[in-house]
Length: 231
Length: 194
Image (cartoon, rainbow over all chains, first blue to last red; front, side, top):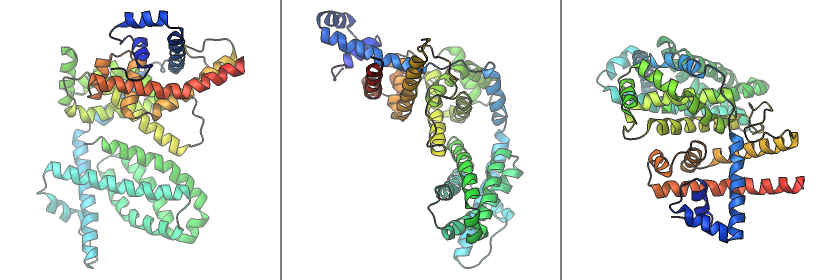
C-alpha cells in the first residue's frame, strides 16, 4: 500500500510495484509525474556512490584466523566464567560484609564452595550482570575523566572503589588465559590506580589521564558489546 | 535456506568449527561490504565483521531455521558496524565523515575524470553514509537490503520479522529520509555547477 505521492514510484523503481504497466502509462501521460520520477532516480543513484571498493585479498582467511581462536574456547569460557563468578561473588560478599561492619571479605575458595549449588545458568546470569555493571561503572568514570567535567575528589573516590573490583576481575581473567580481557582490565587498573592516588596529582596528570581514558573507553565499550553477545 | 547450508548451521550449532568456517568463508565478503557502507573504512569494516561472526557464533542457538542465514548474518553485521561507528564517533567527534578508504579513487558512480565532480560524489557518499547510519534499525536494514543487496520486499520482511507491508513502509521511510538529505545537496551542487 503506497500512501505518499512518491511511494508508488519508489516501488516501481525497485521493481516491486504490483502493476508496473499502470505506472508506465501514468509516466507517459503526466510530465510532472515523469519529472518527479527522474528526480527520484537521480537521488537514489547518489546512493550508488556508496559502492565499496574490494576488500584486501584474503579476507576470508584473515577473518577465520581472527575468529578461530575465539571459537575453540568453550571450556575456557566456562573456566573464565566460573573464575569471574567467583570474583564477582567475592566483591558482592565483601560489600555485604562491609555493610554489616564486619570488614572482612571471604576468600575465593570459600565463595566458590558457597556457589557450588548454583546452576550453570544462574552463574552465567550473575556473571553477565556483574561484569556488565562493572564495565558500565568503569565507562561512566572514564567518560567523566575524558569529558573533564567531574570533580577530582569524586573521580578519586570512584576510581578507588572500582580499583579493587577490577583487580579481582583482572586476576580471574589472567588465570583463565583471557589475555585480551585481562589486558583491558590491566589498563583500567593502572588508570584507576593513578586517579585514586590523590586528587592533587590527578589534577596535574589530568591531560595524560584524559588521553588514556579516551583510548580505554573505546576498549571498554567493545568489551561490553562483546559481553552482550555472551547470552 | 538450502539443505547443505542448514546442515552447516546445525553442525556449527553443535560446536563444529569447520562448519562455521565454511559459513565465515561464504559470507565474509558480503558482510564486509555491508559494514563498509556503514563505516567507510576497510580496517574498521573487518573489525565489525569479526564482531558480527562472533556474535553469530554465540547466538546460533537462537537462529530460526526458517529464516535465511544470509539476511540474519547481514543484520548482525550492520548492528556490529553501527556499534563500531558509534564508538568511533564518540572518540573522534570532529573527524571527517567521508569514507577513509576510498583513497581518492572514484567509486563506480564517480567515474568522471573531473576532480570536482568526484568531490561532489564523495561528499554525497559521505552524507548518504551518515544518513543511513542514523536511520532506525528497521529502516536501515530495509534500505540496505533493498537498494544494495537487491532483496525483495518479502525477503526484507523475513529479515525484519515483520509483515511485507511493514517492510515496504520501512523502505519508504528510509528513501524519504535519504532524499530529504541528498535532494537539497544535489540541488545546491547543480546550482554551483550551473
